[in-house]
Image (cartoon, rainbow, N blue to C red):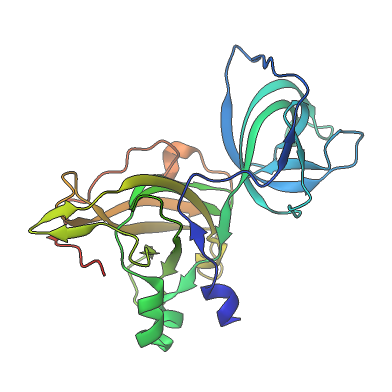
Length: 289
């Protein structure tokens, strides 16, 4: 089991489509007042006469059914696969009778990509083999551009500097502190191992050529809920770069994770919320091997 947990690697480039696209109509049109939407969800088998083998079940329970636009072959996909998609609405109806039941939305699909989906690892697991696991999990900086709770997931969008023409796969994890008590809150730490595909610092400044690569990951954080609780305050922490790229800064965000529907404004960490540097940030020179 250790091998499965610790060998999942993430390529830190643009999230690549895993489906084979086919579309006979290149003249895309826009519907729903011209709006194009992006969201996360999971593949779900469908057998209702749709031209697609899978629908996309959203974290709030609604379902997206592809009826127009980009077709995809899910030969490499499996039911439950986490995906990110770009689409427009063309229609909707209740999935079942009743006003409080999920909706089926019919969509024109523009793009669909696989999203890395992982379970958090516990701090006690890391410390059980501290010498090797601390080194493997890494301590390289990572810039979080957005983070929010959705369903049972903590979704994180991020950027990292990589060297030109790099093909190095990076390693990213979420560590749940299951050892120390922090009042009513749960602490989680985003960790990143760049495998030396990172910025070099010399005389306090970043040196060498690099470009920013973007990625996203969804963590199933249902395991961080204490026994008998359906929601918990969460402090999310990571080490990022300062604005001048002269060093690193400790950052954090806070929110409430719940397995029930909670309005975004009440959760703290919500999509498109501005992620700020923490007030108690400390500046150090990054030690990049």
